[in-house]
Length: 437
Image (cartoon, rainbow, N blue to C red; front, top):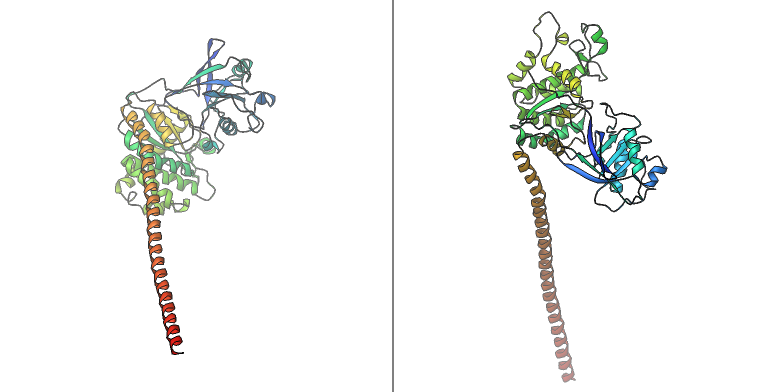
């Protein structure tokens, strides 16, 4: 049975601002998009352009905003509303900001994350945070774009609790293609970190409130366990088929995580329709293993009097528990040491988050060095290949030109020789004819 500890967490954290020579510490909530530099500390000068103030700092369009101050790192302050948070972050990014601070309409921040990804977060590469209204208004009193003295802020994305072996849960959804892309890209990092990190997986599932009131005693075509484990998908019995496929996949993970990565790639490329999930999965050699079928059967409670679709399932119970305790509301997602991962779901960024929670940084430093070296080496190889191809083409072109020139010269010599011979022949003939006369 999967055992892990879910740490109590808050969406809010703290960052430091120096105002008039005094240090002030403010709470903030981290947005669920952009690239979060886990394990690092950022610093920047706070700016609220006058154009934004005139338009309630909505940051929804950059066309009327002047260029930001020419400083090494600028953080832009804006208000929530009038457009999505991702739009504001993208505009701030285009203006040259390194971080966006959004002022909430609420007096206090809660554990409910407001700055969510609307589907366009992949365009954002800077972090975005939200601060309470009172703190934000205090900031605006101190900040203007014409200020002679800039207010400076510091924000740390280091985890305060590092452990010997972090726990990481990958929350999977079969309905989101981006999740499969992440799995493919994350596999290389998993192979490096698998001995230093406790990895688990958990699938998307819901509990039917209606069936809960009925004590889960009636079958539901979208659910297993009488409504304990549900997926609401339009179509007769499709929700149940998704859940059963998820259970099979989880059993592959329990048996061999490496094979799970291989199977997920196969599933993404071959199994497109829910009604064909069972037949498609059974064609793969991994799923044909006897141990997978035994895992599926053993996960159900041993009660011969109940129909299969009404039985409780220990693996699915874990999915329900993970979702309710973790704070993960959007699938796919990641939980690192009890805290939800924020930011664009990218393999490298998730790895940075994991590494920021590790006491022993040896593997992560080696991994970072490898990534730093790879682009350079790859670049050199590519340029060498390009240079070789260009030089080869030039030399081949010169060779063809010389061959053509030589052939042309020979043809000209032959034609010239023929013309000379004809002229000599005509001259001799003319001379002989003249003598006869």
